[in-house]
Amino acid sequence: MLTACGDGDDDTKGNDKIPGVDTGTTAEASSSASTSADAKRPDIALPSDLSDSFENWKTGDATKDTVLVDVQRRVDATNYVIAEGDAELPALGFYYRGTALADARKWVTSIVKNGYSITGANRYYNPRINLFDSTSAGVVYCEDQAQAFAKERKSKKVIKTAVTDKSYVLYTTRLEKNDKGVWQTTKLTSQRGHESCTP
Image (tube, rainbow, N blue to C red; front, top):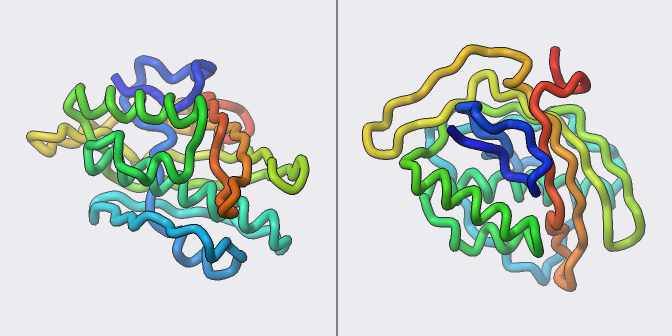
């Protein structure tokens, strides 16, 4: 029904849950990592029935932690735009660019067009980061969707699904820092049931 936000390498077709769907606790993390004062970040307000937790998303390295904060903000932006039902809201363009932005907008539009939103709790864990140079990085992380579900936008009916290995998703991302100091996602792929994420 709903598929992951990626660049075509995703194997999630036919699953009800929504990978890449992210929300809420980035404000705490952002206070510990330096971010550019030049960037006027979009306001993001997530619905009360949607929440995220980010486990062990601090490395102690200032640059790495700044990158991880913007990954979390990108996750929040994605969930916010899905909940609002508008793929053209500026939050997506703030944290994505290039092919990743086009893919994200296409994915959000398909969810909304099919009459769905998202609800529940997402857990993000086991982040691994590699700084390629001063303006590019790679981040790999896992998502636990066992308590996250699709929701019919009109009826508000929650479509609950059984927890299986496919409830756990591995994400591989590339980020590049723009001239305002924002680490934007330029590539994102996902794989359900990857052994590095399953319990």
